[in-house]
Length: 146
Image (cartoon, helix red, strand yellow):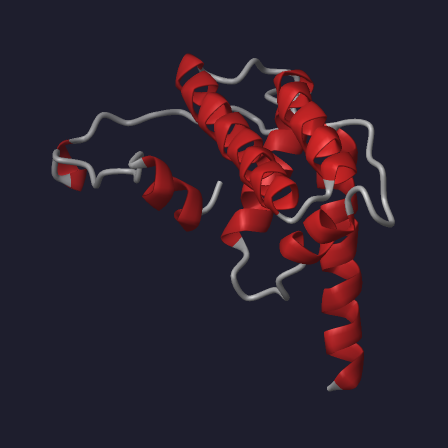
């Protein structure tokens, strides 16, 4: 997970307080063996914070759509906010990486504006997947222009 997320949530990793020569040696297992490993309990807190950021993005967009008189978009965005509870961990982390990638072209606001007008997503997962796809397409077009 990236720097942006840790700064926003206040969970920025702290530097070790024990000098490196005094730290106990740790044996790191084979990465192939850890593929099916369960994430540590501390990750649950981060996952909930990412989920909350996603939910707040939808809620704010719904308020904006409502103030502009777009009731369809507001209704869909509120539904998306409710579906953030169902977002899987890998999708949450993909969303956090999208937030952290400030070097890429901004596409989130464009995608949010299309909801209820040109696009009618059924879930928060569908939104994050499309956001990631749009980011990749925008990045590829920027790369082709160079």
